[in-house]
Image (cartoon, rainbow, N blue to C red):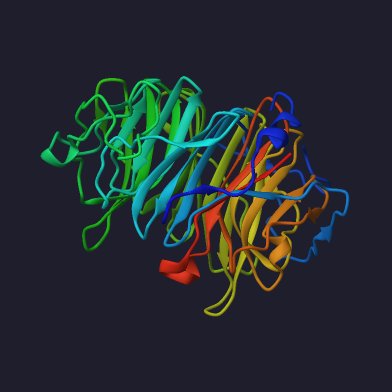
Length: 415
């Protein structure tokens, strides 16, 4: 089992206890001025420097480590549709692609659409459990059919000899020799792209974003309309870091433009700029992550450049009419992933700075708390979070990248 994810704790009782289990206003709102975009969004008071100190929550259930690789791995993406339907993707064995699925009893490896060691399946995204996609780091896309992966190309993608390995077999899992499958071909795609984000608004409405691998790199935005990919133009100087979709008429994009934080919204016909609160005292800012929960709830996580030596993170919340500060961020953790708690609050994961138990935090709209996390890794970093919409199961995936080939790909759960 060298380099494979091996179960170190069973989830049967854990997930059964969850019962049946994808994505509120905080105090201190300052009215803003109306601006262009959906719902006449306005600008509010800007995020302040972090002053919050998270508190331990002794009554909170602990996080449990359920999967871990032996070396050289990192899990990068997760989706949870139900307590017995969880997906995760990443790498093991210092770069070998891995897609795995929890069926309520065990984690089972799913044969990837292209069996090349060099392919990194970077992101999972879905509009529903029947519309699941996986994306490689070079911008290629595949859609899950229920028994295998159907190639959907990518910007500049063409069918190639290196995309001819089989899709998963009828049970959706790879055999011991990793050769099961129907043998349908994948696509070679363009090796000149670097994918940063993907969002599935529907089977005929999928978005990707990233940069080219050219020198200098050029930002790109890709769109799948059910028959092929196109590249809608970006505003001059704009760069998209993350995407969040609720429907074909409700998609968010965040990043930066002209050195400042950028937010755009797609309502079905065009991308409209939406004002982002300025950061006082900062000479530049960028938004790194966006989470779309409902038409009246979205979150964006950003970083402000205060000086050559100082960067600070900030959190914004969309309330259906404007983006505003969501409260001070906690000290001691650099946040890297966010997920709704289903109750108007937020789960946030990151890289703890000298306080390992603070790797995953919870925000209830007023303050931050943390519970116990597994102590089996050194320097864990949360790459993604997912919550099952039919209960309170939360999944965190990541690795400890500072340890390079000794990094462990892991999955943590909480209920």
